[in-house]
Image (cartoon, rainbow over all chains, first blue to last red; front, side):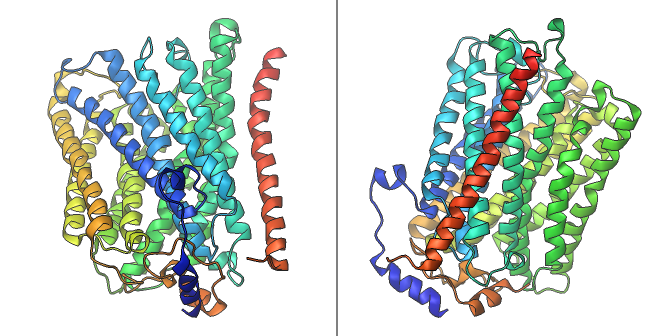
Length: 534
Length: 42
């Protein structure tokens, strides 16, 4: 504790730049973390608005509000914004805030690079959003950009490709920063296996990012040359192979799914022990399970494309390797349950979101197992069952974990407590909304409704109406989240240094709010070992 | 704040690992793009 006092004393003459320069030239990890989180929130609402356009159109059969081309643009842009604009930057924002505080470092290792990584994003998404106004409209071939459909795009095509390059470069630079910080900036005495799980999951995520974002860059560059320079990588008429694109894309795309979800495992592994008031069960097995999931993510890509046709041996390999992922994931789920077993559990908002994550992410995982079964996948492929599956993994999975993390660490960041009643209201409306929204989509998919269509047969009308009602409940309840955070930061009650009785970890040894410069002097070893508690 | 020998050593390590990871990422990035272009020429 002595050390945190030292850190605090040092920060009494805490000088920080003011005005626009503070943000434009930011090198402080907390400022950059805040910018990432605000940016992610803006993209979340923009992508969410697009989702509501989709669900409004699907409220009943027939074409009501938008023409089919624009509908297709909405599905494509919604996915690109949510994946690259909302979830990935939100995780980078949380990493910026928490990794230095959790490993006892004064800042990220490469602060100027950190600034550059962030400021690439507004340019990338300006380019992407500009496509809504160019001739031919925004990209409409799905976020997977499969040729030949994606090659038929209008003027949006080069803008989209360039935007994806910028997003990729930003992610790679951010990932390098996380790896370098964790490997070099840990306080003396903090071994890798003393690190909080959030740092571990982010370290592994960062390696995944460095490995696969260049693959996406290569794939979209080949699309670009096919479109503008007369190559035929993916054009069948020129001797190319469109299926090759799918292989390359999903070699990036499947690890990308784990890039979105591994940090969620880290956040949940921080929150459940805190509110169960018990150390995390099986810390080391959690680390090895995370690494195993990351490894397996490289050898399962073709389960996204069983229906394009492949040899039986290929089908078997990708089916079994996909099912194998259930083993390390099961280790995690059982460890979280074992952590809660006989714990003294309390149900504050972060814990509620973490528990919803545990149930609903597992549900999404089970429907993933169903999709991994080749003959079954031939039925489910490109149906609403797939839409239900990945939204269960990404919304009550990744998005709920981000919200859990924000509620959990907000008192430390801002020095203020959020309104627990409104937080819980937000949780219940979100959880009810998300299930009303996505659960019926399983039924629609099993009944044969294809994904990415603006109109449908009347037999699908009832469940689509239910799903759209859920979408509006979920969408509008997110305004409560903004209200809770805004209200807490503006006028919340003052938070103590350790607002959660069961919280352990170096971040809780710092004063509240966390000073602008923390851990200028590394924490002493006894604080690190007390903080580790696993 | 004066730099201690530990700080200097840490800066060296930070620089070294950043450069290594940067090179790995850049070679992947450029490598995939080059592979596509060279593949086309063949």
